[in-house]
Length: 221
Image (cartoon, rainbow, N blue to C red; front, side, top):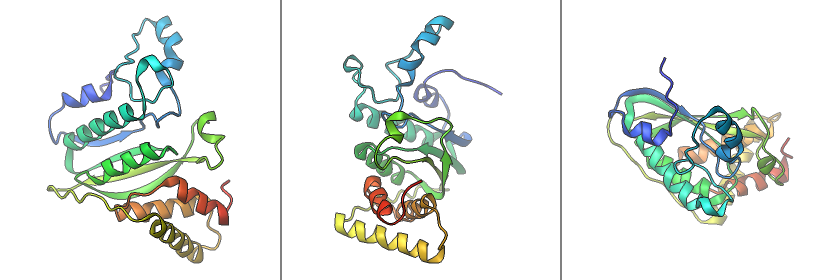
């Protein structure tokens, strides 16, 4: 086993094309946690340097220039490298959870643009709570785990954008479909099915709208 303690983008750039069998990553979810800032005391105590410049995060510290735009650009670069180093026919899993529209839609467009098909979406309970995320009115109670399979050849399909009202109709219809087939369905199962369906169709959507529509019928527990 080889453990490399470095920024992932820098490490990925040094790897050969089509050389990795599986990638799983749980990147900082936008503004949920300022990881290096919170761990600065411990890193200093242990004699480690904090690589603030290359950290993938959204920070309120004005001097760091770690805003949404910076976060989105770096996330695209990292995912592009993951796609490059992954072997054809192999898998990539991404853990993610964000209610920031710009962050979420940027991620969707990036994932839809990969030479990969989505093969599974699961939900994963938090290992620890986040005050920033969980205290919001429609805060998610789980993370999404998106798994993709790389094509054997280049088949990038892009994404679809639909009008807001049409998106709401599609979302409501998907929720009804699942609820009718599963009368004891829990909220996260309905949410998971809806997101999976929209992502399989490569549709750019607003997760906040889905959560609000879901909340009208089934309170999120």
